[in-house]
Image 1 (cartoon, one colour):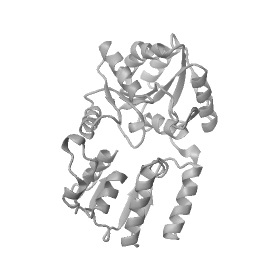
Image 2 (image 1 turned 135 degrees about the vertical axis):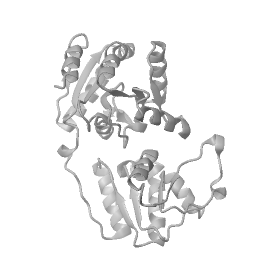
Image 3 (image 1 turned 45 degrees about the horizontal axis):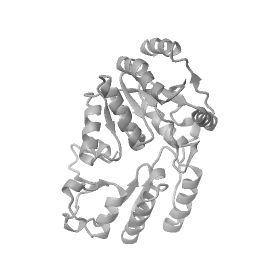
Image 4 (image 1 turned 135 degrees about the horizontal axis):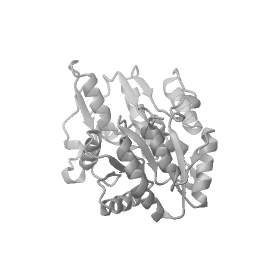
Length: 323
């Protein structure tokens, strides 16, 4: 997402003369201690909270002249352990040396816990602030045709993707398949490659260079099926993605019996912005069915159940025909 934000900035600022730099963690293979890095002097710095925090602490990134500080996907930055601490430190340090700096928090979703934290923290730090929230029903979930497919076991999930969904995806555009863990991503990747399908995979264990390569090839249309953990659930836009598959439903990291509704929204919306779009949820067992029911209740949206042997083919003809 950091790299994608930089790409957008470069396009928008192509003729402005604005200078920009990326502040990303250095891969182990080419590790350079923060203290030995060159100071960052660009007008726009786009980076991860941890790296920005280290650069500020090492006096490699000055803050006294900063005018605007932006947190994209702020709910994630202020909810996840590690991100939260770094984000708060950066915010306090910048406000300390540049009290007139404007701080902007953006996200498609803010749960009640994060809203309460932001309100209290921002009020204590800035005293005056403005809030603007979009109503939940206005978020782009309803336009996506959502389906659920009940299957007997994990192997059946792979067979459905191989025999039904891969062919459907080829007809309508690019496909993203979301899994819960890095292990599932690697397992599914190996299985589909063994069956002769060309797929790429991205997860947290890849070094930044490899992640960028996978994303670049997918965005350029060189690959059509991308397997991903929730690493790409947020802030990733690709106009040709018309099909999203939840191989694993998103669940709360602290309670696997509860859905992660925010992650579900972000995943589904990968196919929710352009043209014909659909999402398939592959369910296996009572727990998956229970989680799916909770997701439906949360969004007040009934997800259509399909019989994989017939209804998926019927749906395919409708979708390809533009209905």
